[in-house]
Length: 246
View 1 (cartoon, helix red, strand yellow):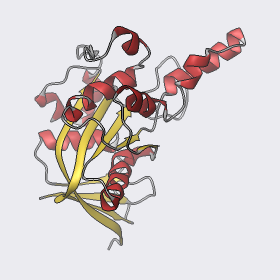
View 2 (cartoon, rainbow, N blue to C red; view 1 turned 30 degrees about the vertical axis):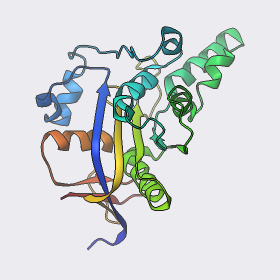
View 3 (cartoon, one colour; view 1 turned 90 degrees about the vertical axis):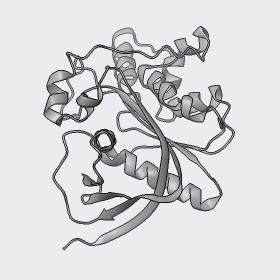
């Protein structure tokens, strides 16, 4: 018998995911093993971001480009939304590149260094989208999505009507042979508009569930395509999250 730690209810009226691969609805409904085996065969995709000038696009990393592509359309009518950004990897590839540059050349690019910190991506978003409301950057290992949604829920209780939540991941490149490391099958950014309501109930429980081979955000997207209304995902605290969709 598991013990409930907490629960909260939210609405997600809009969401969008953008990946560096082209996936069909059938691909999204497939098994995790299919993703791992097929990701190298899927066509590559890079968003054009025509709503930004070439000069502004040039400074964006792959994660940032996916972030902007996923979130921009959702915020067309209300661009100045508070933002919760969550990522486990963050700008990990930029960091590894900086380390190599420091070791080989004994110097690093100040611009690249300033864009390597964890909140740099959401900082770029707030600058280019002219966000004056609260922005938050966090990391919570496998359950970035759930922790980000909890943060958004708390913000809704304070004073906001809507919160933009974005989970973005770019897996560590294979050329960096770090161990142990969890690599997602592809890069992605999942953007969600979160409001008060009871469309979803999330319950954090103490009982451990089976470990997932992918992160919880990709599990959420797959279950949207598969029209699953109840599922569990692992918690970084050692328990699990129970999802219930009304």
